[in-house]
Length: 636
Image (cartoon, rainbow, N blue to C red):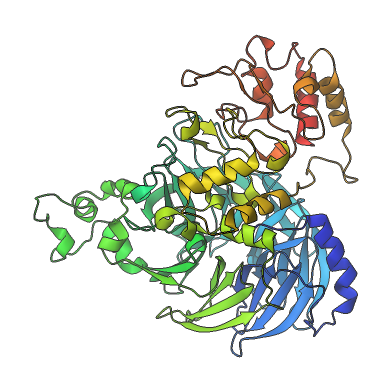
Protein backbone atom coordinates (compact mmCIF):
# COMPACT_ATOMS: atom_id res chain seq x y z
CA UNK A 1 0.00 0.00 0.00
CA UNK A 2 2.79 2.36 -0.90
CA UNK A 3 2.21 5.03 -3.48
CA UNK A 4 4.07 7.83 -5.13
CA UNK A 5 1.09 10.12 -5.61
CA UNK A 6 -1.25 11.65 -3.10
CA UNK A 7 -4.87 10.39 -3.10
CA UNK A 8 -6.14 13.76 -4.31
CA UNK A 9 -3.80 13.68 -7.30
CA UNK A 10 -4.89 10.17 -8.20
CA UNK A 11 -8.52 11.15 -7.94
CA UNK A 12 -8.04 14.09 -10.30
CA UNK A 13 -6.11 11.84 -12.68
CA UNK A 14 -8.94 9.33 -12.72
CA UNK A 15 -11.58 11.99 -13.29
CA UNK A 16 -9.63 13.71 -16.01
CA UNK A 17 -8.97 10.49 -17.89
CA UNK A 18 -12.35 8.79 -17.49
CA UNK A 19 -13.65 10.35 -20.68
CA UNK A 20 -10.75 8.77 -22.58
CA UNK A 21 -11.60 5.23 -21.48
CA UNK A 22 -14.47 3.57 -23.28
CA UNK A 23 -16.46 0.93 -21.47
CA UNK A 24 -14.63 -1.80 -23.40
CA UNK A 25 -11.22 -0.13 -23.43
CA UNK A 26 -8.10 -0.54 -21.38
CA UNK A 27 -5.76 1.69 -23.38
CA UNK A 28 -3.02 3.39 -21.37
CA UNK A 29 -3.44 6.81 -19.93
CA UNK A 30 -0.25 8.62 -19.04
CA UNK A 31 2.52 6.16 -18.15
CA UNK A 32 2.27 5.12 -14.51
CA UNK A 33 3.06 2.26 -12.22
CA UNK A 34 0.61 -0.59 -12.02
CA UNK A 35 0.27 -2.00 -8.53
CA UNK A 36 -2.40 -4.70 -8.18
CA UNK A 37 -3.49 -4.80 -4.57
CA UNK A 38 -6.47 -7.13 -4.20
CA UNK A 39 -7.79 -9.89 -6.45
CA UNK A 40 -11.18 -11.63 -6.24
CA UNK A 41 -12.78 -14.25 -8.50
CA UNK A 42 -16.33 -13.74 -9.68
CA UNK A 43 -18.84 -16.20 -8.18
CA UNK A 44 -18.87 -18.25 -11.38
CA UNK A 45 -15.07 -18.24 -11.61
CA UNK A 46 -14.93 -16.74 -15.08
CA UNK A 47 -13.47 -13.34 -14.17
CA UNK A 48 -10.90 -11.93 -11.79
CA UNK A 49 -11.29 -8.36 -10.51
CA UNK A 50 -8.06 -6.64 -9.48
CA UNK A 51 -7.70 -3.23 -7.84
CA UNK A 52 -4.73 -1.20 -9.10
CA UNK A 53 -3.60 1.10 -6.32
CA UNK A 54 -1.24 3.45 -8.14
CA UNK A 55 -3.06 3.63 -11.49
CA UNK A 56 -6.50 4.33 -9.97
CA UNK A 57 -8.19 1.49 -11.83
CA UNK A 58 -10.06 -1.77 -11.53
CA UNK A 59 -9.04 -4.46 -13.99
CA UNK A 60 -11.33 -7.29 -15.05
CA UNK A 61 -9.44 -10.32 -16.36
CA UNK A 62 -10.86 -13.34 -18.19
CA UNK A 63 -9.78 -16.24 -15.97
CA UNK A 64 -9.92 -18.82 -18.77
CA UNK A 65 -8.18 -16.91 -21.53
CA UNK A 66 -5.95 -14.90 -19.15
CA UNK A 67 -6.60 -11.59 -20.88
CA UNK A 68 -7.86 -8.18 -19.80
CA UNK A 69 -11.53 -7.53 -20.55
CA UNK A 70 -11.98 -4.09 -18.98
CA UNK A 71 -9.99 -1.42 -17.27
CA UNK A 72 -12.22 0.97 -15.34
CA UNK A 73 -10.98 4.35 -14.13
CA UNK A 74 -11.67 5.05 -10.45
CA UNK A 75 -11.11 7.72 -7.84
CA UNK A 76 -8.50 7.79 -5.11
CA UNK A 77 -6.46 4.62 -4.65
CA UNK A 78 -8.52 1.46 -5.22
CA UNK A 79 -8.05 -1.11 -2.47
CA UNK A 80 -10.72 -3.61 -1.37
CA UNK A 81 -12.84 -5.54 -3.88
CA UNK A 82 -16.02 -7.59 -3.43
CA UNK A 83 -18.33 -9.34 -5.91
CA UNK A 84 -22.09 -9.55 -5.46
CA UNK A 85 -23.28 -13.14 -5.07
CA UNK A 86 -25.00 -13.06 -8.49
CA UNK A 87 -21.90 -11.62 -10.20
CA UNK A 88 -23.84 -8.61 -11.49
CA UNK A 89 -21.95 -5.99 -9.48
CA UNK A 90 -18.41 -5.38 -8.25
CA UNK A 91 -17.71 -3.10 -5.29
CA UNK A 92 -14.36 -1.30 -4.96
CA UNK A 93 -13.21 0.91 -2.10
CA UNK A 94 -11.61 4.19 -3.16
CA UNK A 95 -9.00 5.06 -0.53
CA UNK A 96 -8.64 8.82 -0.18
CA UNK A 97 -11.85 9.60 -2.02
CA UNK A 98 -14.11 8.44 0.82
CA UNK A 99 -16.27 6.33 -1.47
CA UNK A 100 -17.05 2.81 -2.63
CA UNK A 101 -17.63 2.51 -6.37
CA UNK A 102 -20.36 0.17 -7.64
CA UNK A 103 -19.42 -1.27 -11.03
CA UNK A 104 -21.17 -3.15 -13.81
CA UNK A 105 -18.63 -5.84 -14.78
CA UNK A 106 -20.31 -6.59 -18.12
CA UNK A 107 -20.31 -3.02 -19.40
CA UNK A 108 -17.19 -2.03 -17.49
CA UNK A 109 -18.77 1.10 -16.03
CA UNK A 110 -19.19 2.81 -12.67
CA UNK A 111 -22.89 2.87 -11.81
CA UNK A 112 -22.88 4.80 -8.54
CA UNK A 113 -20.85 5.55 -5.42
CA UNK A 114 -21.51 5.17 -1.71
CA UNK A 115 -20.04 7.68 0.73
CA UNK A 116 -18.09 6.07 3.58
CA UNK A 117 -15.03 6.99 5.67
CA UNK A 118 -12.27 9.03 4.04
CA UNK A 119 -9.86 6.10 3.71
CA UNK A 120 -11.78 2.86 3.02
CA UNK A 121 -9.78 -0.35 2.80
CA UNK A 122 -11.24 -3.87 2.90
CA UNK A 123 -14.78 -4.76 1.86
CA UNK A 124 -17.11 -7.65 2.63
CA UNK A 125 -20.67 -8.44 1.63
CA UNK A 126 -23.50 -9.85 3.70
CA UNK A 127 -25.85 -10.33 0.79
CA UNK A 128 -28.76 -11.88 2.72
CA UNK A 129 -28.76 -8.82 4.95
CA UNK A 130 -28.32 -6.51 1.95
CA UNK A 131 -25.20 -5.08 3.59
CA UNK A 132 -21.80 -3.95 2.42
CA UNK A 133 -19.17 -3.73 5.17
CA UNK A 134 -16.37 -1.21 4.71
CA UNK A 135 -13.18 -0.93 6.80
CA UNK A 136 -12.52 2.79 7.35
CA UNK A 137 -8.84 2.70 8.19
CA UNK A 138 -7.95 6.14 9.55
CA UNK A 139 -11.18 6.74 11.46
CA UNK A 140 -11.04 3.28 13.09
CA UNK A 141 -14.54 2.11 12.29
CA UNK A 142 -16.59 -0.09 10.00
CA UNK A 143 -19.43 1.23 7.85
CA UNK A 144 -22.49 -0.97 7.37
CA UNK A 145 -23.95 0.26 4.09
CA UNK A 146 -27.46 -0.57 2.88
CA UNK A 147 -27.06 -1.85 -0.68
CA UNK A 148 -30.51 -0.62 -1.68
CA UNK A 149 -30.13 3.05 -0.91
CA UNK A 150 -26.36 3.39 -0.40
CA UNK A 151 -26.79 4.84 3.08
CA UNK A 152 -25.01 3.79 6.22
CA UNK A 153 -27.18 1.82 8.59
CA UNK A 154 -24.48 2.02 11.23
CA UNK A 155 -20.82 2.88 11.78
CA UNK A 156 -19.17 0.68 14.39
CA UNK A 157 -15.96 1.71 16.13
CA UNK A 158 -13.08 -0.77 16.33
CA UNK A 159 -9.69 -0.35 18.03
CA UNK A 160 -7.32 0.75 15.28
CA UNK A 161 -6.96 0.89 11.49
CA UNK A 162 -9.25 -1.88 10.25
CA UNK A 163 -7.90 -3.17 6.95
CA UNK A 164 -9.71 -6.41 6.15
CA UNK A 165 -13.12 -7.90 6.89
CA UNK A 166 -14.60 -11.37 6.48
CA UNK A 167 -18.20 -12.47 7.08
CA UNK A 168 -19.23 -15.89 8.37
CA UNK A 169 -21.24 -18.03 5.91
CA UNK A 170 -24.43 -17.61 7.93
CA UNK A 171 -23.80 -13.82 8.02
CA UNK A 172 -24.15 -13.67 11.78
CA UNK A 173 -20.67 -12.30 12.44
CA UNK A 174 -18.08 -10.09 10.80
CA UNK A 175 -14.40 -10.59 11.62
CA UNK A 176 -12.32 -7.41 11.36
CA UNK A 177 -8.54 -7.28 11.25
CA UNK A 178 -7.04 -4.23 12.96
CA UNK A 179 -3.73 -3.49 11.25
CA UNK A 180 -2.00 -1.98 14.31
CA UNK A 181 -2.07 -2.21 18.13
CA UNK A 182 -4.29 0.39 19.74
CA UNK A 183 -3.04 0.65 23.31
CA UNK A 184 0.12 1.70 25.09
CA UNK A 185 3.25 0.24 23.56
CA UNK A 186 5.00 -0.14 26.92
CA UNK A 187 2.56 -2.82 28.05
CA UNK A 188 3.77 -6.45 27.85
CA UNK A 189 0.70 -7.61 25.89
CA UNK A 190 0.79 -4.84 23.28
CA UNK A 191 -0.56 -6.36 20.05
CA UNK A 192 -3.11 -5.96 17.31
CA UNK A 193 -6.55 -7.43 17.91
CA UNK A 194 -9.24 -9.03 15.79
CA UNK A 195 -12.65 -7.46 16.31
CA UNK A 196 -15.90 -9.44 16.21
CA UNK A 197 -19.12 -7.70 15.09
CA UNK A 198 -22.66 -9.00 15.50
CA UNK A 199 -24.43 -8.29 12.20
CA UNK A 200 -27.90 -9.04 13.54
CA UNK A 201 -27.76 -6.21 16.06
CA UNK A 202 -25.05 -4.21 14.27
CA UNK A 203 -22.95 -4.10 17.43
CA UNK A 204 -19.32 -4.57 18.43
CA UNK A 205 -18.95 -7.75 20.49
CA UNK A 206 -15.31 -7.45 21.49
CA UNK A 207 -11.79 -8.37 20.46
CA UNK A 208 -9.50 -11.38 20.30
CA UNK A 209 -5.94 -10.35 21.13
CA UNK A 210 -3.11 -11.73 19.04
CA UNK A 211 0.19 -12.78 20.70
CA UNK A 212 2.27 -9.91 22.16
CA UNK A 213 4.22 -8.10 19.46
CA UNK A 214 1.68 -8.85 16.70
CA UNK A 215 1.07 -6.18 14.12
CA UNK A 216 0.50 -5.71 10.35
CA UNK A 217 -2.68 -7.82 10.30
CA UNK A 218 -3.66 -8.51 6.72
CA UNK A 219 -6.27 -10.72 5.06
CA UNK A 220 -8.77 -13.01 6.79
CA UNK A 221 -10.41 -16.27 5.69
CA UNK A 222 -13.25 -18.14 7.39
CA UNK A 223 -13.96 -21.87 7.25
CA UNK A 224 -17.12 -22.96 5.45
CA UNK A 225 -18.70 -24.12 8.70
CA UNK A 226 -18.01 -20.74 10.33
CA UNK A 227 -16.04 -22.34 13.14
CA UNK A 228 -12.60 -20.92 12.47
CA UNK A 229 -11.10 -17.70 11.12
CA UNK A 230 -7.55 -17.54 9.76
CA UNK A 231 -5.49 -14.36 9.96
CA UNK A 232 -2.00 -13.46 8.71
CA UNK A 233 0.24 -11.08 10.64
CA UNK A 234 3.76 -10.19 11.73
CA UNK A 235 4.91 -11.33 15.19
CA UNK A 236 7.82 -9.39 16.73
CA UNK A 237 9.94 -10.00 19.81
CA UNK A 238 10.17 -6.35 20.77
CA UNK A 239 12.30 -6.74 23.90
CA UNK A 240 15.16 -8.37 21.96
CA UNK A 241 17.79 -5.95 20.59
CA UNK A 242 16.92 -5.38 16.96
CA UNK A 243 20.30 -6.53 15.64
CA UNK A 244 19.79 -10.12 16.88
CA UNK A 245 17.99 -11.26 13.76
CA UNK A 246 19.27 -14.82 13.49
CA UNK A 247 16.73 -17.64 13.84
CA UNK A 248 13.77 -15.33 14.34
CA UNK A 249 14.86 -13.79 17.63
CA UNK A 250 13.50 -10.39 16.59
CA UNK A 251 10.86 -10.97 13.95
CA UNK A 252 8.67 -13.85 12.85
CA UNK A 253 5.64 -14.20 10.59
CA UNK A 254 2.49 -15.93 11.64
CA UNK A 255 -0.88 -17.43 10.93
CA UNK A 256 -3.39 -17.23 13.77
CA UNK A 257 -6.49 -19.41 14.00
CA UNK A 258 -9.49 -18.02 15.88
CA UNK A 259 -12.32 -20.09 17.31
CA UNK A 260 -15.42 -18.10 16.37
CA UNK A 261 -17.69 -20.16 18.61
CA UNK A 262 -15.85 -19.09 21.73
CA UNK A 263 -14.30 -15.86 20.39
CA UNK A 264 -10.84 -16.99 21.45
CA UNK A 265 -7.44 -17.53 19.88
CA UNK A 266 -7.13 -21.23 19.14
CA UNK A 267 -3.52 -21.33 17.92
CA UNK A 268 -0.75 -19.29 16.32
CA UNK A 269 1.73 -21.05 14.04
CA UNK A 270 4.85 -19.60 12.44
CA UNK A 271 5.20 -19.62 8.66
CA UNK A 272 8.99 -19.31 8.89
CA UNK A 273 11.54 -22.05 9.32
CA UNK A 274 14.57 -21.83 11.62
CA UNK A 275 16.90 -20.28 9.03
CA UNK A 276 14.58 -18.53 6.58
CA UNK A 277 11.89 -16.01 7.35
CA UNK A 278 8.52 -15.81 5.61
CA UNK A 279 8.43 -12.02 5.82
CA UNK A 280 5.32 -9.90 5.50
CA UNK A 281 2.50 -12.44 5.03
CA UNK A 282 -0.44 -10.78 3.31
CA UNK A 283 -3.10 -12.60 1.31
CA UNK A 284 -4.93 -15.73 2.41
CA UNK A 285 -7.24 -18.15 0.62
CA UNK A 286 -8.89 -21.36 1.83
CA UNK A 287 -9.93 -24.11 -0.57
CA UNK A 288 -13.68 -24.88 -0.68
CA UNK A 289 -13.13 -28.20 1.08
CA UNK A 290 -11.08 -26.50 3.80
CA UNK A 291 -8.15 -28.89 3.34
CA UNK A 292 -5.59 -26.40 2.01
CA UNK A 293 -4.78 -22.83 2.96
CA UNK A 294 -2.70 -20.55 0.75
CA UNK A 295 -0.80 -17.50 2.05
CA UNK A 296 1.11 -14.91 0.03
CA UNK A 297 4.47 -14.01 1.56
CA UNK A 298 4.85 -10.55 0.15
CA UNK A 299 8.31 -9.72 1.49
CA UNK A 300 10.00 -12.85 0.10
CA UNK A 301 8.01 -13.19 -3.17
CA UNK A 302 6.54 -16.59 -2.34
CA UNK A 303 3.24 -18.30 -1.67
CA UNK A 304 2.87 -20.87 1.07
CA UNK A 305 0.66 -23.95 0.90
CA UNK A 306 -0.54 -25.35 4.25
CA UNK A 307 -2.08 -28.78 4.81
CA UNK A 308 -4.98 -27.69 7.01
CA UNK A 309 -6.54 -31.13 7.27
CA UNK A 310 -3.53 -32.61 9.04
CA UNK A 311 -2.80 -29.36 10.91
CA UNK A 312 -6.29 -29.42 12.43
CA UNK A 313 -5.77 -33.01 13.52
CA UNK A 314 -2.37 -32.32 15.08
CA UNK A 315 -3.62 -29.17 16.86
CA UNK A 316 -6.32 -31.19 18.60
CA UNK A 317 -3.79 -33.75 19.83
CA UNK A 318 -4.40 -36.27 17.08
CA UNK A 319 -0.83 -36.90 15.95
CA UNK A 320 -0.87 -40.59 14.87
CA UNK A 321 0.91 -42.97 17.22
CA UNK A 322 3.14 -44.26 14.46
CA UNK A 323 4.25 -40.84 13.28
CA UNK A 324 8.01 -40.15 13.63
CA UNK A 325 7.19 -37.07 15.74
CA UNK A 326 5.14 -39.17 18.17
CA UNK A 327 8.19 -40.33 20.07
CA UNK A 328 11.16 -38.56 21.71
CA UNK A 329 14.26 -38.12 19.58
CA UNK A 330 17.64 -39.76 20.15
CA UNK A 331 18.50 -37.20 22.81
CA UNK A 332 15.44 -38.11 24.83
CA UNK A 333 13.73 -34.76 24.21
CA UNK A 334 10.28 -34.37 22.77
CA UNK A 335 8.89 -31.91 20.20
CA UNK A 336 5.96 -29.55 20.15
CA UNK A 337 3.63 -31.99 18.37
CA UNK A 338 4.30 -34.73 20.89
CA UNK A 339 3.62 -32.28 23.71
CA UNK A 340 0.33 -31.28 22.05
CA UNK A 341 -0.57 -34.95 21.63
CA UNK A 342 -0.09 -35.40 25.35
CA UNK A 343 -1.89 -32.13 26.21
CA UNK A 344 -3.62 -30.08 23.46
CA UNK A 345 -3.24 -26.93 25.57
CA UNK A 346 0.46 -27.07 24.71
CA UNK A 347 -0.42 -25.67 21.28
CA UNK A 348 0.02 -22.25 22.92
CA UNK A 349 3.79 -22.80 22.56
CA UNK A 350 3.55 -22.99 18.76
CA UNK A 351 3.85 -19.19 18.53
CA UNK A 352 7.52 -19.62 19.49
CA UNK A 353 8.37 -22.73 17.47
CA UNK A 354 10.02 -21.98 14.12
CA UNK A 355 10.30 -25.64 13.13
CA UNK A 356 6.76 -26.82 13.90
CA UNK A 357 5.16 -26.64 10.44
CA UNK A 358 8.31 -27.68 8.60
CA UNK A 359 9.11 -30.64 10.86
CA UNK A 360 5.61 -32.03 10.39
CA UNK A 361 5.69 -31.41 6.62
CA UNK A 362 2.64 -29.16 6.91
CA UNK A 363 3.91 -26.26 4.79
CA UNK A 364 5.37 -25.85 1.34
CA UNK A 365 6.80 -22.51 0.26
CA UNK A 366 6.78 -21.78 -3.46
CA UNK A 367 8.66 -18.88 -5.11
CA UNK A 368 6.67 -16.83 -7.62
CA UNK A 369 7.96 -14.93 -10.61
CA UNK A 370 6.40 -11.60 -9.66
CA UNK A 371 7.52 -9.21 -6.94
CA UNK A 372 5.50 -8.43 -3.82
CA UNK A 373 2.49 -10.80 -4.01
CA UNK A 374 -0.31 -9.31 -1.93
CA UNK A 375 -3.96 -10.11 -2.56
CA UNK A 376 -4.70 -13.81 -3.03
CA UNK A 377 -7.81 -15.59 -4.30
CA UNK A 378 -8.94 -19.10 -5.24
CA UNK A 379 -11.42 -19.89 -7.98
CA UNK A 380 -14.78 -21.13 -6.66
CA UNK A 381 -13.96 -24.73 -7.69
CA UNK A 382 -10.57 -24.49 -5.96
CA UNK A 383 -8.53 -25.28 -9.08
CA UNK A 384 -6.88 -21.93 -9.82
CA UNK A 385 -4.99 -19.56 -7.53
CA UNK A 386 -4.51 -15.88 -8.42
CA UNK A 387 -2.20 -13.43 -6.70
CA UNK A 388 -1.63 -9.71 -7.19
CA UNK A 389 2.08 -8.94 -7.67
CA UNK A 390 2.22 -5.36 -6.53
CA UNK A 391 5.64 -4.34 -7.81
CA UNK A 392 5.64 -6.07 -11.18
CA UNK A 393 2.09 -5.00 -12.04
CA UNK A 394 0.80 -8.45 -12.93
CA UNK A 395 -1.71 -11.07 -11.90
CA UNK A 396 -0.14 -14.50 -11.56
CA UNK A 397 -2.19 -17.66 -11.94
CA UNK A 398 -1.02 -20.88 -10.27
CA UNK A 399 -2.33 -24.41 -10.33
CA UNK A 400 -3.92 -24.79 -6.91
CA UNK A 401 -3.05 -28.48 -6.67
CA UNK A 402 0.67 -28.17 -7.37
CA UNK A 403 1.46 -24.48 -7.01
CA UNK A 404 3.03 -24.49 -10.47
CA UNK A 405 2.64 -21.33 -12.59
CA UNK A 406 -0.10 -21.41 -15.20
CA UNK A 407 0.01 -17.95 -16.70
CA UNK A 408 0.33 -14.26 -15.93
CA UNK A 409 -1.47 -11.14 -17.06
CA UNK A 410 0.37 -7.83 -17.20
CA UNK A 411 -1.78 -4.86 -16.23
CA UNK A 412 -0.99 -2.08 -18.66
CA UNK A 413 2.51 -1.27 -19.77
CA UNK A 414 5.39 -2.72 -17.79
CA UNK A 415 7.82 0.07 -16.94
CA UNK A 416 11.35 0.19 -15.67
CA UNK A 417 11.28 1.59 -12.14
CA UNK A 418 12.65 5.04 -11.54
CA UNK A 419 14.66 5.74 -8.40
CA UNK A 420 11.64 6.31 -6.15
CA UNK A 421 9.83 3.18 -7.32
CA UNK A 422 13.03 1.15 -7.01
CA UNK A 423 13.41 2.47 -3.46
CA UNK A 424 9.83 1.46 -2.70
CA UNK A 425 10.54 -2.05 -3.98
CA UNK A 426 13.71 -2.37 -1.88
CA UNK A 427 11.88 -0.98 1.17
CA UNK A 428 9.43 -3.90 0.90
CA UNK A 429 11.94 -6.59 -0.07
CA UNK A 430 12.87 -8.90 2.82
CA UNK A 431 15.30 -10.84 0.66
CA UNK A 432 17.64 -7.90 1.27
CA UNK A 433 17.66 -8.89 4.96
CA UNK A 434 19.78 -11.56 6.64
CA UNK A 435 17.80 -14.83 6.52
CA UNK A 436 14.82 -12.89 5.11
CA UNK A 437 13.17 -12.17 8.47
CA UNK A 438 11.91 -8.67 7.71
CA UNK A 439 11.82 -5.77 5.30
CA UNK A 440 11.92 -2.07 6.09
CA UNK A 441 8.14 -2.13 5.66
CA UNK A 442 7.75 -4.79 8.36
CA UNK A 443 8.38 -2.13 11.01
CA UNK A 444 7.14 0.76 8.87
CA UNK A 445 3.94 -0.57 7.27
CA UNK A 446 1.24 1.54 5.71
CA UNK A 447 3.32 3.95 3.59
CA UNK A 448 6.37 3.97 5.83
CA UNK A 449 4.46 4.97 8.94
CA UNK A 450 4.40 3.17 12.31
CA UNK A 451 3.72 -0.33 13.62
CA UNK A 452 2.51 0.81 17.07
CA UNK A 453 5.27 -1.05 18.96
CA UNK A 454 8.35 -0.25 21.03
CA UNK A 455 11.69 -1.61 19.79
CA UNK A 456 15.07 -1.92 21.49
CA UNK A 457 17.47 -0.16 19.13
CA UNK A 458 21.12 -0.65 20.01
CA UNK A 459 22.43 2.78 18.99
CA UNK A 460 21.30 4.28 22.31
CA UNK A 461 22.14 1.28 24.47
CA UNK A 462 20.35 -1.98 25.16
CA UNK A 463 17.38 -2.41 27.47
CA UNK A 464 15.43 0.81 26.81
CA UNK A 465 12.83 0.21 24.06
CA UNK A 466 11.56 3.22 22.12
CA UNK A 467 8.35 3.71 20.20
CA UNK A 468 8.59 3.35 16.44
CA UNK A 469 8.51 6.60 14.45
CA UNK A 470 6.90 7.41 11.13
CA UNK A 471 9.28 8.10 8.23
CA UNK A 472 7.02 10.77 6.75
CA UNK A 473 9.05 14.00 6.33
CA UNK A 474 12.07 12.32 7.93
CA UNK A 475 14.29 14.23 5.51
CA UNK A 476 12.95 17.52 6.92
CA UNK A 477 13.07 16.66 10.63
CA UNK A 478 16.61 15.63 11.61
CA UNK A 479 18.07 14.18 13.72
CA UNK A 480 16.71 10.63 13.61
CA UNK A 481 15.51 8.63 16.60
CA UNK A 482 14.15 9.65 19.99
CA UNK A 483 17.67 10.08 21.33
CA UNK A 484 18.79 11.91 18.17
CA UNK A 485 21.51 9.33 17.56
CA UNK A 486 21.51 9.62 13.76
CA UNK A 487 22.43 12.92 12.14
CA UNK A 488 19.71 12.78 9.50
CA UNK A 489 17.48 10.47 7.48
CA UNK A 490 20.23 9.66 5.02
CA UNK A 491 22.52 8.43 7.79
CA UNK A 492 19.62 6.51 9.32
CA UNK A 493 18.95 4.62 6.09
CA UNK A 494 22.62 3.75 5.76
CA UNK A 495 22.65 2.49 9.35
CA UNK A 496 19.56 0.38 8.67
CA UNK A 497 21.38 -1.41 5.88
CA UNK A 498 24.48 -1.82 8.04
CA UNK A 499 22.70 -3.40 11.01
CA UNK A 500 19.60 -5.10 9.57
CA UNK A 501 20.11 -5.70 5.87
CA UNK A 502 22.77 -7.26 3.72
CA UNK A 503 25.49 -5.24 2.00
CA UNK A 504 23.61 -2.95 -0.39
CA UNK A 505 24.23 -2.98 -4.09
CA UNK A 506 25.26 0.32 -5.73
CA UNK A 507 22.37 2.77 -5.73
CA UNK A 508 20.11 0.88 -3.32
CA UNK A 509 20.67 3.17 -0.34
CA UNK A 510 20.04 6.24 -2.48
CA UNK A 511 16.88 4.68 -3.91
CA UNK A 512 15.41 4.00 -0.45
CA UNK A 513 16.26 7.57 0.56
CA UNK A 514 14.44 8.81 -2.56
CA UNK A 515 11.39 6.70 -1.69
CA UNK A 516 11.24 8.14 1.82
CA UNK A 517 11.47 11.66 0.39
CA UNK A 518 8.53 10.86 -1.89
CA UNK A 519 6.11 10.06 0.95
CA UNK A 520 3.29 12.57 1.19
CA UNK A 521 0.87 13.17 4.08
CA UNK A 522 -2.79 12.27 3.79
CA UNK A 523 -5.31 15.00 4.59
CA UNK A 524 -6.58 14.34 8.09
CA UNK A 525 -10.02 12.71 8.29
CA UNK A 526 -10.66 15.04 11.24
CA UNK A 527 -10.85 18.08 8.96
CA UNK A 528 -14.29 19.17 7.76
CA UNK A 529 -15.68 18.54 4.27
CA UNK A 530 -13.77 21.56 2.94
CA UNK A 531 -10.53 20.17 4.43
CA UNK A 532 -10.52 23.02 6.94
CA UNK A 533 -10.34 23.05 10.73
CA UNK A 534 -13.51 22.41 12.68
CA UNK A 535 -14.62 24.98 15.28
CA UNK A 536 -13.16 22.84 18.06
CA UNK A 537 -9.85 22.55 16.20
CA UNK A 538 -9.75 26.33 15.70
CA UNK A 539 -10.12 26.80 19.44
CA UNK A 540 -7.44 24.18 19.95
CA UNK A 541 -5.11 26.08 17.65
CA UNK A 542 -5.45 29.09 19.94
CA UNK A 543 -4.49 26.92 22.90
CA UNK A 544 -1.55 25.52 20.95
CA UNK A 545 -0.26 28.98 20.00
CA UNK A 546 -0.83 30.62 23.39
CA UNK A 547 1.99 31.94 25.55
CA UNK A 548 0.62 29.99 28.48
CA UNK A 549 1.03 26.52 26.96
CA UNK A 550 4.02 27.35 24.74
CA UNK A 551 3.30 24.29 22.57
CA UNK A 552 4.36 26.17 19.44
CA UNK A 553 7.72 27.11 20.93
CA UNK A 554 9.09 23.56 20.53
CA UNK A 555 6.62 22.35 17.89
CA UNK A 556 7.43 25.18 15.51
CA UNK A 557 7.64 25.72 11.77
CA UNK A 558 5.81 23.93 8.98
CA UNK A 559 6.78 20.51 10.36
CA UNK A 560 5.99 21.46 13.98
CA UNK A 561 9.43 20.74 15.42
CA UNK A 562 12.41 22.83 16.48
CA UNK A 563 14.71 19.87 15.64
CA UNK A 564 15.94 19.77 19.24
CA UNK A 565 15.72 17.48 22.26
CA UNK A 566 13.88 18.57 25.42
CA UNK A 567 13.08 17.29 28.89
CA UNK A 568 9.30 17.14 29.23
CA UNK A 569 9.26 14.93 32.29
CA UNK A 570 8.70 11.61 30.51
CA UNK A 571 11.88 9.78 31.49
CA UNK A 572 11.16 6.21 32.57
CA UNK A 573 13.09 3.81 34.73
CA UNK A 574 14.79 2.21 31.71
CA UNK A 575 15.85 5.47 30.07
CA UNK A 576 19.38 6.82 30.16
CA UNK A 577 18.55 10.44 29.48
CA UNK A 578 15.96 13.07 30.38
CA UNK A 579 15.86 14.62 26.91
CA UNK A 580 14.11 13.29 23.84
CA UNK A 581 13.69 14.51 20.28
CA UNK A 582 10.78 16.83 19.52
CA UNK A 583 8.71 14.96 16.93
CA UNK A 584 6.96 16.67 14.06
CA UNK A 585 3.19 16.68 14.31
CA UNK A 586 2.03 16.18 10.72
CA UNK A 587 -0.29 13.14 10.56
CA UNK A 588 -0.32 12.89 14.33
CA UNK A 589 -3.74 11.24 14.05
CA UNK A 590 -2.13 8.03 12.66
CA UNK A 591 1.16 7.79 14.58
CA UNK A 592 0.11 6.70 18.06
CA UNK A 593 0.87 5.58 20.66
CA UNK A 594 2.62 8.74 21.75
CA UNK A 595 5.80 9.81 23.56
CA UNK A 596 9.20 8.14 23.27
CA UNK A 597 8.12 5.03 25.13
CA UNK A 598 4.61 4.74 23.71
CA UNK A 599 3.18 5.25 27.17
CA UNK A 600 0.28 7.42 25.98
CA UNK A 601 -2.31 5.50 23.97
CA UNK A 602 -4.15 8.71 23.07
CA UNK A 603 -3.33 12.37 22.75
CA UNK A 604 -5.52 13.15 25.73
CA UNK A 605 -3.33 10.87 27.86
CA UNK A 606 -0.30 12.95 26.81
CA UNK A 607 -1.78 15.97 28.57
CA UNK A 608 -3.57 14.28 31.47
CA UNK A 609 -1.69 11.17 32.60
CA UNK A 610 1.77 11.83 31.16
CA UNK A 611 2.21 15.53 31.91
CA UNK A 612 4.01 15.49 35.24
CA UNK A 613 4.27 18.90 36.87
CA UNK A 614 2.89 20.45 33.68
CA UNK A 615 6.30 20.09 32.05
CA UNK A 616 4.90 19.13 28.66
CA UNK A 617 2.02 21.58 28.53
CA UNK A 618 3.42 24.49 30.52
CA UNK A 619 0.16 25.49 32.17
CA UNK A 620 -2.80 23.56 33.56
CA UNK A 621 -5.55 23.07 30.99
CA UNK A 622 -9.25 22.69 31.53
CA UNK A 623 -10.98 19.58 30.21
CA UNK A 624 -12.49 21.64 27.39
CA UNK A 625 -9.12 23.10 26.44
CA UNK A 626 -7.62 19.62 26.27
CA UNK A 627 -10.46 18.43 24.05
CA UNK A 628 -9.98 21.40 21.74
CA UNK A 629 -6.22 20.99 21.67
CA UNK A 630 -6.58 17.30 20.79
CA UNK A 631 -9.05 18.23 18.01
CA UNK A 632 -6.44 20.56 16.54
CA UNK A 633 -3.58 18.09 16.79
CA UNK A 634 -5.66 15.36 15.14
CA UNK A 635 -6.32 17.72 12.25
CA UNK A 636 -2.66 18.25 11.34
